[in-house]
Amino acid sequence: MANYYMLGGDGKEYGPVSAEQLRQWAVEGRANAQTQIRATDAVGYVAFGTVSELTASPVVQAPFPASAPQPRFFTQAQSAEDTETSAQTKRLAAIVAAGGVWMKLLALLMFLLTAGLCVMIIPIIIAWLPLWQGINLWGAANQAKQAVYTGSEHDLQQALEKIRRSFTIGFFMTLGLGLLALVYMAIGLMMGGMNALQGLGGNGSF
Image (cartoon, rainbow, N blue to C red; front, side, top):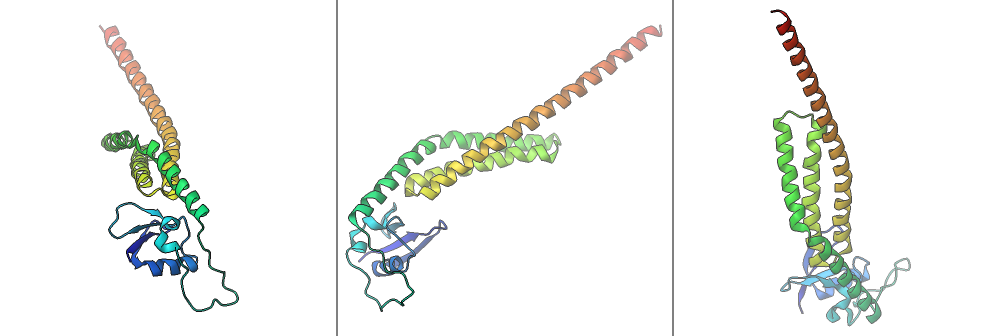
């Protein structure tokens, strides 16, 4: 029998463990038909309920205590539904991941903008916004790519959450930079007006 890795709810990979151990985890409620697993010699994840080796027979174990929940066995209908859910997640994630290159390029521009603002000694309340924007966009691109690979709804949700956050950051960043531009413009006009007045005063002294 093959050994397997299991992707936990915390995003970490556990294993390798035997098929018998995985079935035991399912009985204990630590895994279900939608849990993502992969064989040690495989690259991609599949849903637990789609692997016949794991669903063919229940785990032989001591009787459950009276208060313990009864084991949940996976049906063919559940397996098909979980497989379709995973496939749909991968299709949606692929749409987001298709823009991953542009998200990362924009993230790099945000990092450069952060460096430029720091050189200009711009107030930290504005300078850190493009840095945060860049980190979010870079993370969203990576999370979407991982969702295409794993078919995990959690990964896709995390990618979309980072994209949503980037719009919020973008609003405040644009507002802050716009206000800063107005301040510099006002200072420039004041300096220009003062120079003009000095010029008039100098001309009147002759």
